[in-house]
Image (cartoon, rainbow, N blue to C red; front, side, top):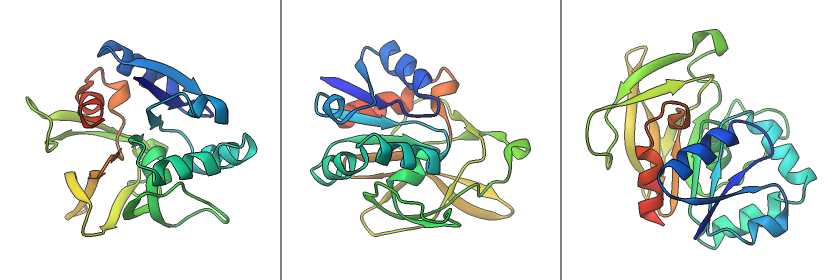
Length: 193
């Protein structure tokens, strides 16, 4: 089984290293024919509007939407969470997502780059000690549909906001586990495939 990592923009190298450290066979995905060769896909953090535009320019947007609709397992971190959402608050003009998770996310919800932070998180389905969540211009989930399972939430300004969700074969986090050295989210994703 090959796990693809969308390699148009963002921290795709870190996801490759995280996946390979737990024994996954990986492949960078930049073209539609490469997408055909993978069983699952990771959409990295980066800039969601840029990734979306590049996916359209490289002919990947439609094929990714089709594979998600056909049940391909996908994990998205940060920008990947935005791209897996069905709805986006504060979307950039003309912004499109691949969709698949019945949720509304808010872009840059926790603030600007200088307001990035770390938070200890208990993530449902991840055994052991709490994870360190690194939030960099991160989204949060505003609302979820009935088939979406919330795996972790963060309190921010006295409100609880979901930051890790799963719906069927789709998993999304607003934080970046790929840069912490803690690969338990990647293991959770592989176990679901």
